[in-house]
Every structure is written in C-alpha cells, then in structure tokens.
Image (tube, rainbow, N blue to C red):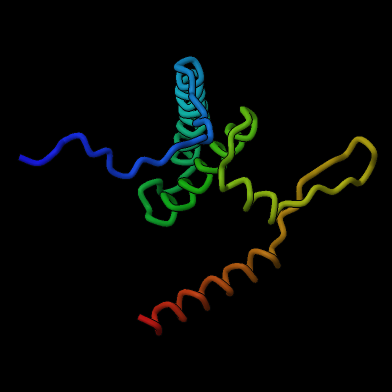
Length: 133
C-alpha cells in the first residue's frame, strides 16, 4: 500500500475574497424580475387586444416578431427603471435622440438613417459569415 502521508502540491493564498450574495439580495432580484414580467404583461395584453379589435392580424409572423420587439422594449424600460442592465437599452439609446422645441417641449426622435445603416451592415456581416462557412 502506498504512503498516504505525502502532501502533494499545496498552493497557499491569499485569495481574493469572493463576493457573497445574500439571500435577501437574491430574493429582491427575483421579486424585481416578477414585477417586470407582471408590468410587461399588464401593458402588452391590452395592447394586443386593442390592435386585434382594430383589424390587425395578431397571428401574423411579422406582427409576432414586431410585438416581441415592443415587449422587450417595455421590459428594457422597466430594467432601467429598477437599475438593471438590459441590452435593448443600448439599441434604444443609439437610435433614439431627444430634441427640444421649446423649454417645456421635449420629444424623442427615431433615427431612421442610423437604423438603415445598421441593417445594411448586419446583412453584409451575415453574408460574409455565410461565405466563410
């Protein structure tokens, strides 16, 4: 039988302290995510019904894709409000600009040209990826 008293390689610290997440923090995040889901649902369902009542085909693939985008935008708004990161906010901040006409009139403007450039660039990148595969 082999000698079990050999210690082998032991690496001594000091180690960086690992950030410990408290149960209360985890519960807060879980409650916040549930709140976000509830708000998004309470906003989106009436909107779907209203659009359907006004003749939109809510079963159309293009509608479903566009509405998914709207849903994610609502969720991103709630994430930002509660102090969480959401990638959709990067897009929103890139394509929307705030403009002021008068001191009290502030409105958002959609940057069509930037979105068109982004889409063209994305299509070109997808084509390059297909060619490389």
